[in-house]
Length: 363
Image 1 (spheres, one colour):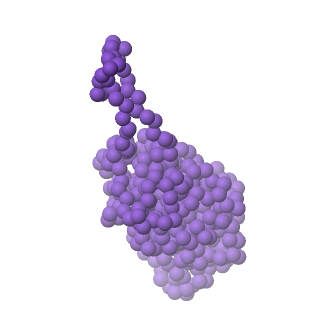
Image 2 (cartoon, helix red, strand yellow):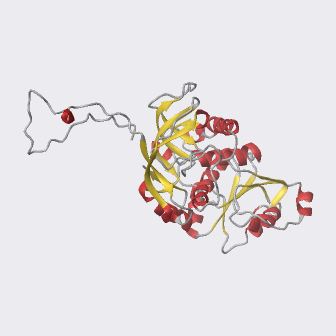
């Protein structure tokens, strides 16, 4: 990694060779190494199943005037990675072709317009791609300091979930203290972070998950009402727990198959924010309930936003989320780490949905 000093070149001398001390052979003269122009990265050899991911040598990224070059210590898996691997989600124009939308590491170089960051800084970052590699170039406005008390590797678990949850639940859905909040997929990376952040600001948290183990874990993180969607009707449970009113905000990664049920689960002036379509993208809905309850329906991704919008979100995250992490109220939830050479195994685990929280890759 870039944080390890380069060792001087020491030639290997064959034992059968007799050296002439007065006139050294040219190939035995010690010389200074130049930086490697190629790095290791996980490459999608062809769209498909996890086994299409292979670790290969590729060209190092080049940084622009407003960018930072990071030696990656860890990256984390996200749903976008599995979709891109399958050929279902192309990276934004100009982005790295490699997977990985967040990372943590050490600054190796900075562009001439970068003033905040310097070589040697320990940072984490929100990426448009390129995290599954030894090095990545990232706009300086998407770089964050490692939160106090968090290891450099664990810091890789925060940028994507923090920016997603803060921008959707708080900046756009305006969840506030005293309100009720339902998270679908409560044991996911986004879910485990959203539970902690919502409790930090004083909301009452509901989650849906698919096993008793996940119910117990989410409860331990602070979720007030934990619902096993395989054995319980979450609409009925929400109504029961809220005196028939419904919740104020829903963070939904399911989409079509849950949409009408989400509407039925909302309070007056309720807000749904959709961040995924695991249950499909086309549905039929009774619009009268949206009209009667004054419901707001929103949806957004993070990866395709403008550099300016991402920088704004990252700035808000540092101001509002990093203090919660520094206080110990919001903790990283890392289920397992894999060497980057085992990216395929990491994807298999993620797609099994048996994990809780985040999965990391270590170069």
